[in-house]
Image (cartoon, rainbow, N blue to C red):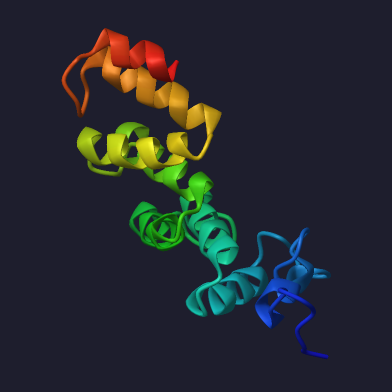
Length: 144
């Protein structure tokens, strides 16, 4: 049965805590990927993030960092701090993704401003090392 309750949309019901839409489905299997993709293509931020993670980790799909970045970008552009952090990490650390420290700083900064502690630390490290930004120890301390 599909309906809305309060502010929960149909997709929200499908993508609730614990990924109810994948109950009874192997979490890393191809059926789960189909369900994530269906919701992600409909604009669901959590599904976009989760699908990006499946591609980044190679769960249910062949590992594909370009596809992971694509889905993380969709979620991050809608304000998902976890996706913003993942993008920063991919641009700064992941082999197979072209290094772009300025892009990493951009995404870490967005996540850090939302209180993502890991992004705050990574941003501090980039300021400390002068990667993607001019070296600035005072700014590094602010983020550490």
